[in-house]
Length: 299
Image 1 (cartoon, rainbow, N blue to C red):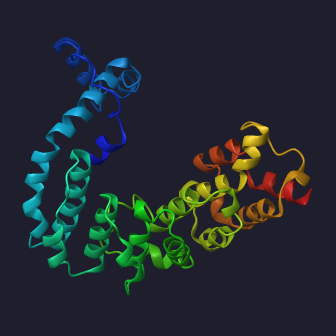
Image 2: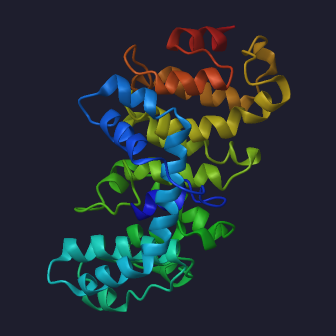
Image 3: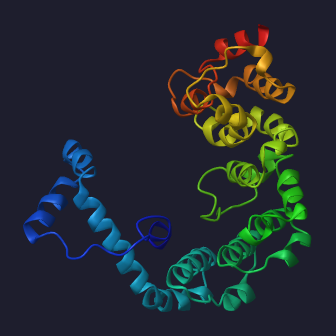
C-alpha cells in the first residue's frame, strides 16, 4: 500500500469532500470481484480518481504511525519477517518523509537475502550505497548499484553489466527475492541499465541483450528486451514519428541491425499468444512478427 501511494495519486491537493455514502456504496458494489464488467466501467469514472487521490493523501498522513507499528518487526526472530519489515519500513519512511533506522535488522542479518533487502532499502531511502559496491557478494554489489544515488557512477553501471553477463545466475541469487525485483532479477537490472543510458549506450549494451536472449520467453520478452530496444530505436522514432514503420532498411544503423539479428535468432521472443512484446515493436515502428524482422534484415 505504501509503495502504491508513493507512485500514484499523490500529486496535487486532495479533492475537497468525498462522494456521498450512496455513491460510495455504488462504487464498492461495482468493484466486487463478481461484477467484472461493472468494475471495468467504474474504474474509468472520475469518482475513482477522487477516491484514490484521497487514499494516497490519507496513507501519507498515516505513514508515521504505520512505521512505528512495523519497526519492532525489524528485529523479529524470523528472517523472512525481518526482510519484509525492512521493505515496509523503508517504503513508509519514504512516504512519510522519515529517516528509517535499519540498524537492528542489519545487526541480525544472516543471509544474502537480508543483506540485499537492507541495501536496497538504504538506497531507495536516499542513502549512500557506495561502500557496498566493493562487497564480496555480487548480488550485494548489484543491489548497491541500483540505488538512485549511483545513477551517474560508472562503477555502478559496470556492476550491473557484469551481473547481466550471467542472467541465469542473477535470477538464482535469492531464496526470498526482495520485493524490489517484481519479476526476474535480470529484467530489473536491464530496466535500470537502459534507464541510465542515453542512445549512445545502445552499442555498449548489445552484449546484454545477447546474454539475456537465451533465457527470454514470450512472457518475459517485453521486460527483458523492451528497454534495450527502446534505447536502440527511440532516436529514429523521435525523428520519423512513433507510428512510422521502418520502410528503408538502409536507414538502420549497424547497431540497430545487430539488435534485430538477436531478435530474429532467438525463439523466446516470439509467440502468437502474447501481445506485450508486439506492442513494443509496433511502438518502435518495427515488424511485429519474426518473419517481418527476418524480411527486413534480408532486404
